[in-house]
Length: 111
Image 1 (cartoon, rainbow, N blue to C red):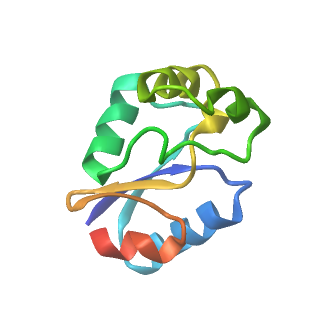
Image 2 (spheres, rainbow, N blue to C red; image 1 turned 135 degrees about the horizontal axis):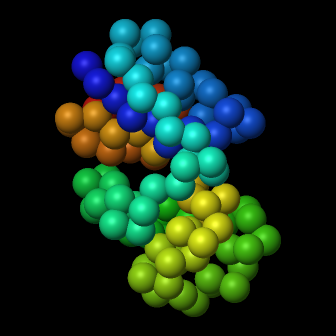
């Protein structure tokens, strides 16, 4: 099975999710999204496939998320493209869907 993980190697949850995918025998493509951020269209597609809104995928712990408190999903997507640290991680995509790996075990739903 193929899987793509939008990964931050400094994040423990992202590392745990990557290990879970590797242990499951997945053929994993790792996208370090801070170095190679997804496009706005890709983010919108991933969230739609996951049944999430952009707000659901917003990393609210970041200081730069505070001004987005009352923002629309379109505004949040625009902000994520400008500042990819706002993207909650890790996002995992397989043929079976997309899940946010928080907790990492959530990705088992799409393996």
